[in-house]
Image 1 (spheres, rainbow, N blue to C red):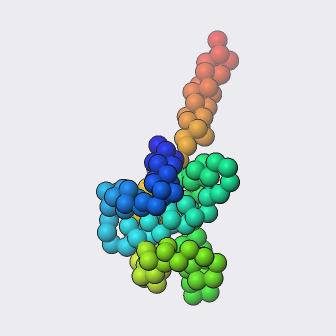
Image 2 (tube, rainbow, N blue to C red):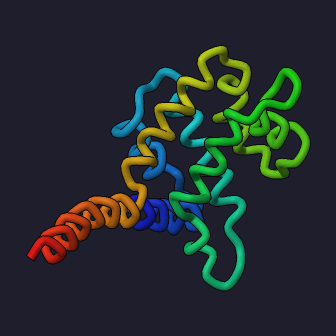
Length: 145
């Protein structure tokens, strides 16, 4: 579901409209800095999308990697801050991230976004582990008969 939402937001972004991203964010995250971090990370995601079907680059996994860069420290800053200061060529993204990058609560904001994105994590492996328990019970039952 989140991938579909990101694709729709990306389509609006390509048309020059980020109002839908701002609206989605205000309904989803608190306005304590988490919202600005989310918008900034999504804009980075969108700016990184390229190729023939660029909208397929805007996935939960790619967004999660961008948000996780907040947790990776390099000296006194984090990798997201390094990216924004040294690598980023789209200065419009700075509008959302400039205040939040030095915020002492940035790790908490990132944790909130990570928790949200983890809710959409594929459950295939977890489901298999549950089935494995049932399979083991079934095997034991067959062996006992």
